[in-house]
Length: 114
Image (tube, rainbow, N blue to C red):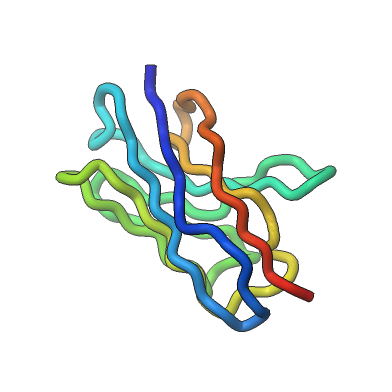
């Protein structure tokens, strides 16, 4: 079973930055696209950023230009650098495969004060 552990969330003021980290376990981490997802209370989980095994990236329009996803295949980690944070970025953030989901981890809470 594929498992993920997220860290790096916290409370930040609008305009601030955070860097989220995810450590993967299980088989075949390095061959799958990885995504960062977020879910706010009362809303569906949404995919905000994807990085392929080769390092190509895609972003939701809402975060484009502000967030950067990256991965370290040797360490089996994926990162999300979040800059210029807005109150609407407040959510619990999760990492997972994109397209072939593993189990959801606990996520890490990001709160941007309004």
